[in-house]
Each structure stands twice: as C-alpha cells, then as structure tokens.
Image 1 (tube, one colour):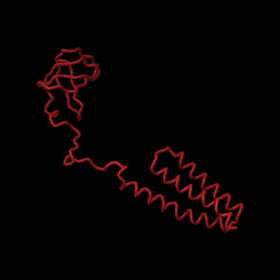
Image 2 (spheres, one colour):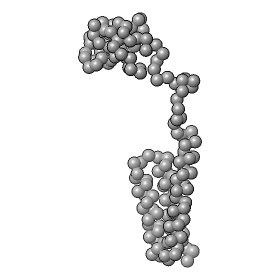
Image 3 (cartoon, helix red, strand yellow):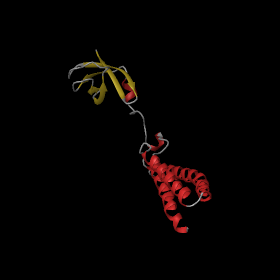
Length: 158
C-alpha cells in the first residue's frame, strides 16, 4: 500500500515546485494552471486508488502547506537580490530630472537637428534633447522652451 502513495506524493511535490516557479517566473498563470492540474491529478489518484480517508488527509495537507509555501516564497522573493529596490532616493544618486533642466523654461534656443517632433536643440550653448507638441521644425529654426516636464523639454517655434 505504501507504493501506491509514491506517485501522488511525487505529483504533490512537483506541484509545489511549479508553484514556486510561478512565483519567480511571470507566466501569466500558465504555471498556475499546471500546478492546479498536478494537485488535482494527485488527489484523483489518492481518492480512486487508495481511500477517501487518505484523500482527505492529502487535502488537509494541501490546505495547510500550500498557503505556507506561497507566503514563504513571496517573503523570500522580496528579500532576494533578484527583486527591484522599492525606493530610489536622491541620496543614492537617483534623480527624476536633470539638475539644469528646470532652469531652461522660458529660454530661447535653436534646433540643432530637425525636430520631427523630437530632436536636439542648442540652449545656452549646450545640447539638449527637446520635443515639440507635434509640429515639425527645420534645423536652424529658433524656438522658445514652453515647459519642462521631468526630463522632457517642450519647445515651440518663435
């Protein structure tokens, strides 16, 4: 009778391994469906091949262990080096905006390349990536900086 338990237990262990893989690898639920299939087939084998009591013991073990494995897997993933940092600070060298871009608002410049609508402009002697609101500006056209939105410098023709 102990030999009858080997295949369902191996299926249960495979289901747990696939569940852990689902936590690590984003598959859009494909591994989740495989996990459910492995658990379901394991339970089917236990209920039909062994006994209903053994099937209920397997279900109780699944109900207790699967959330524990899920919770532990998520906690371990959160502290692993594979995850992204949750905060980016200026003290760590991260900045959402280049230091000098905010001061460009209202200044004039010249298109160094064709702006269709994005390109490079010269403002106060420095090259800056600029964009128009959809209009095409030829190389050499003078423009004024309308707004600075983050790293985006929006210009319009003078």
